[in-house]
Length: 254
Image 1 (tube, rainbow, N blue to C red):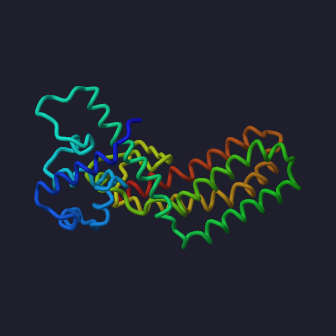
Image 2 (tube, rainbow, N blue to C red; image 1 turned 90 degrees about the vertical axis):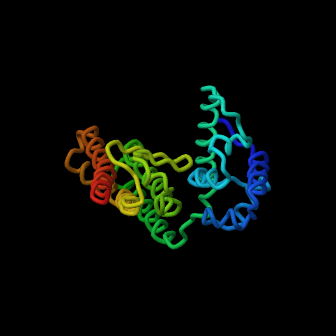
Image 3 (cartoon, rainbow, N blue to C red; image 1 turned 120 degrees about the horizontal axis):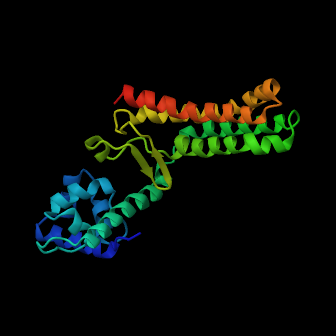
């Protein structure tokens, strides 16, 4: 992955801003940001969100490619290898920004719900140990419990509540946020449906942490001699409970 030279980027932004006779505050106002953000860019301390690249390039009178490269380019066609490098830099900027912003997005108000969900999930699992062989639980149920808690932590505590503007301008069915990826063919993520999708994912994680253990015990009571069938039913309901609501709300509020 190619990385953007933050110092070079900052020097270029500063030089272009000064050449246009703008102050940091004036540039920030054009972007609806604070002058502190512009100051950090110019000092090489941070980089803008990927969604700011195009309006920033327009404000400075340069192309996005020149902005990412930190220099003005001649009018000759850009070689394919360099285009690939620029694209990789843009992708890297998106990923690094998302990871860095997790702490800033921490939603403390949702922490009690998440902790309560985890407590119920763990309590149910250990209660089930007295009813079903441990080996059976560890091979079938533990993975689903861990996944529901991990996804729950993201959806309840760290997920962005609003998407970048380019999701509204283009049809995009891939949601990328740092290490988290969600690819849903056939739908487009945008700010009209994202809030509903996020609520559906939160509700799913809550139910997925609480329901699987009693459902697992019921299935083993009914089909105890067919463990593979029990596991397939549980997995089908686990995944279906996530994707069916996402498709429904994404299409309803598209």
